[in-house]
Length: 267
Image 1 (cartoon, one colour):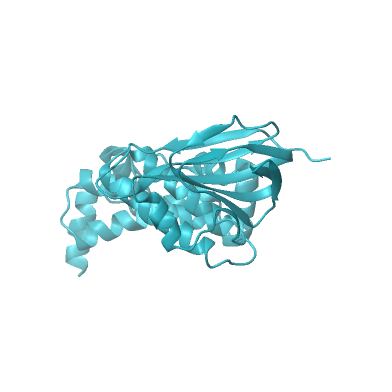
Image 2: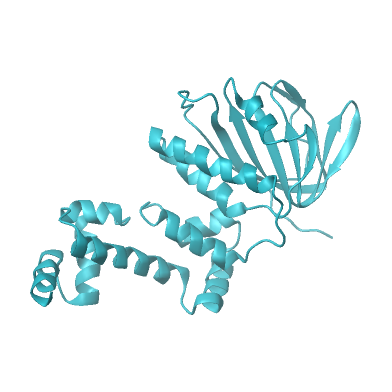
């Protein structure tokens, strides 16, 4: 018997419309009941991770298994059932040229073989859309391109969870909302499991790894730039300059100002 936790985790974009297409939203769903039928004027893909989903096309239920994508072009009627459960990531793209984008990438309406789902990229889009700025909306579109091009160049087994977590840390350490709980939620694993897998892979827990990445970037900025301490802290994902100062002093014995002075005399 399968045992899956029902999940509905998603983030919607703010609708940055200066391009012919934009990321409307993305999410990670695990369902055991039929999704509400809908008519959608946007493009959307559904990437199966585990379980199976039945997608109806002209009254025929077509199964979507792990490694496969279902593509609904704009102006499609969506009718989806789990069989018996359906664990998947989805990505929707809106705008007047959304359909042209998928045609250019040679997506066929309906079934497309894609290989293992790049869950870390979907997680990145969720973070980028959550920010809400125009720059983040454009970054989300860039990440969506990566997903779509990967879908058209299928790859093999999914990367280990620890590796995905490490990539998320290096790409998002400047976001103060990133912590171990957020990483575990984005990768849909228990925090304890993530800690164990990361410790086994890299010899230290993910929280300490994240702290090290932030601190090393802070030291680099103090050494190579003249940015104010407040800005350095912000660029490294620290909630405040005071907390950055506390962490730096604990690790080096210096305040940021003293560290800069010491580094100059050392050089």
